[in-house]
Length: 384
Picture: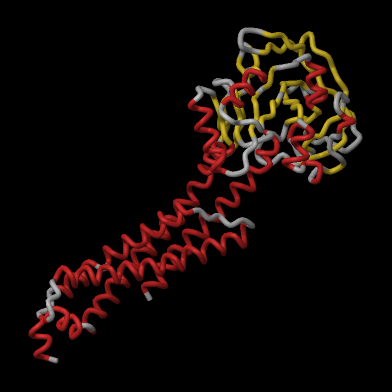
């Protein structure tokens, strides 16, 4: 019974945690695609902010101009620490004359990167950019974006964009819309932007650089990694070299705060289940001690000390916790994988969860163990 209770508690914890992680990863995957990588080398002022609860955006500039990084210098420093899969990303503020002159973002896309690593060409309605589109005024947009208002955007439409004249200032790119030019882009594809970046207008990188005359600078330099451990390792190396970096997992942490109430609710349920399981375990061990008085008496008569009996009972409680914890952990992990589509499995999490369960069960076994250690051996044997 105690094993079942412990297994249920761990099962609930692992299932809920796996589901939340799955939701977070699915929500962040479009962001990863939009931003073009897993790490983003940027100017120190370039930050992620929460504009309103659950809504995040980037601060890409200030009243003095837009932040940028020197692409060649940044890539050179990254190569010195062994990071070579880098891609400069350029995005510039623009205006849509037909949309009340609200600021939007036009982003230059690295076509080879998008197709090779993110397979965007397979998820875009219509078609994605090809090599022949480099330098051409074609665009891929998010048809569900609020920037269109009630207008219905479709493939083949013409999109007028006011691009600023770009001047170079002190660590800034100064955007002059008064001297800017209007460029008409043909919409060739539609995409889904997810929770961030839905107002971004995608164009080939070569097109954006040609129209803005920005040859070397980039908004940030993206780095693609194969796993979270690689991301963490690269982040450490980058920070050790005094470079400013943001990772996709930083955004996951920000997103995780939106699940705070749900996680707290689950933790409360798990805590209550652990407590009930511990009480059940105490009663089971007390009953077991009562049934084993004869065996305990024999152990004491052949030289076992009270501390030996105490350790024996506590170890048995810990073993029950270990078995229940393992059953709950693996069943919960696989159940979460069925619903989230991904198995979240790492050694650190296993060790942490199991150690907590074993400690709780060991504490629950202390009272029965002390009671067993005080059983008078001679009286038990005389009675038997």
